[in-house]
Length: 103
Length: 103
Length: 103
Image (cartoon, rainbow over all chains, first blue to last red; front, side, top):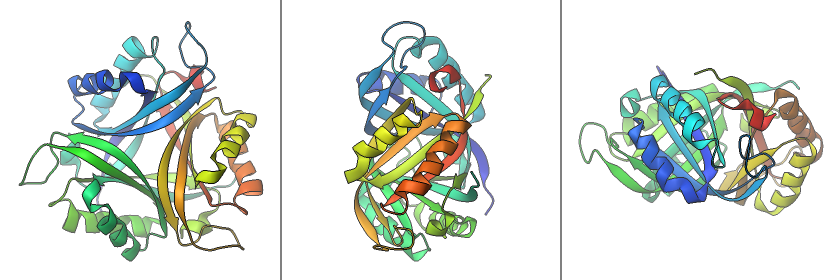
């Protein structure tokens, strides 16, 4: 089956900032996402300052996006979110059968 | 450590169709899956007709399968599910340490 | 945006062993993880002996780690966990924008 390659971006963040974070994603061009509640624990949660350990309720947000949108999201997270909140993000290529949905 | 490459297929769907969807996956050769409840929102959720926005409770189904089963699942979703329901799916290669479990 | 490549390891396991499993991961060098509750069903859940079908509550643990830690986790799971519990694991490469967090 012919698949188109897009990017899956996964963000795990402290639950308190979930609504602001999904609003940010929409502004950056993310057309849809799925959110799952979880529990996280990290020994180093913040960049450079603030508490270096964090544990508590999380949201796990995932979205399939174009490479351009994935870059925009990672750049914005690096600039405005990683220094201040317990937020983690990673991307990988995925194959989708109906790419039009995620353009 | 020597790993075998298989395919991870992830399906996010409106929660109402979860049971029918997992039954379909079993018929297509999926030997096991994990299901997580979530909340989704998409600006374009249906193909061609019906509402173009969707939000609500979701299930996130994931299964590690052979490439053949992954193809069968995506083909079936494209034919019978994507046009009618809020269903999204993507695949990527993953390495597993005990491939016999997922054959 | 320049990304560093690390490994995402995902473990799905019967919920009863969640605390012992995350303690094991910490011993193996995993610096942080996110845990989501779910429901799983597999036709072949154990290796070689014991029940060959399993269904019930699961935990889904994911962690972004170095290739060295990913190998150590898979080796330990293969040796001490796969033969006795309903545990599944897979790895894939992911790109992260702040690799220092996961070293």
